[in-house]
Image 1 (cartoon, rainbow, N blue to C red):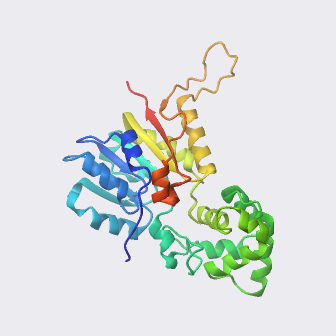
Image 2: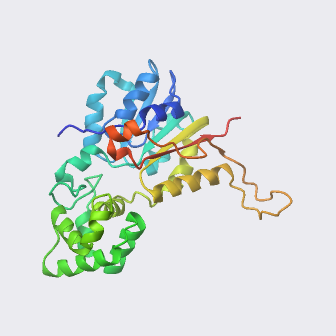
Image 3: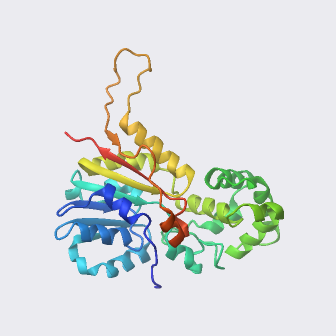
Length: 315
């Protein structure tokens, strides 16, 4: 296993919002390389506990080794944070002081060509965060219809040339199966007009690779419901801190937090609430927190990050 490199995004801002303290119980739903978790463990010393969840077995192994000095204060769980309410140990339910989610793909996964996440490295079309799953990027690219490919490229990648790229993929796979990342990059390059490729400001394959990764890992399928279920995990006054990296994720988090704060379904002009749905807490961040220029210069992958925070209601 190579080194699981990942530069934690907005570490100080996350800690300011999460407010780790001695004896607190915290959940890092996207453990990755353990960067955020290490800071939480340090700031909640000597008795704070962090439950670290990740789909990726390599991430769990690396973080456990990296943070072994904290002993049983770190509890690792292989799984999907979407299922957090059912996979964390029962004795911690309702006692968690804070939950942190960093929804970005890790630098290790991007830089490891064998994982197939990056258009910068040649490798098999994979993109599975959980390698025990059978469904991978190759299945998406070679089996989805032109219409379905167009839909996911546009919906998850906000790709202007979605239909044209899908058409080129369908034509190319008539000749042979599309097996590798560079084969896909070459097809995208042919599909996107040269003039536009130079104007985007980002690599021309970025949006398609992002869309396929989201589809393979089901990253947005249950995000809103997962956030609601996390309220059961938190104690009163506990916080959910979520870092997103593209507009669709951010929109889901923003709208879900807003609904948690005001779940009432009565007509706006109703004289009084009769639905019985009361606020679950408050939105802490009216506007998302974003990285500063210094962080963006040091870690360009942080440039699109947004942090939103919700606090469960206190009695």
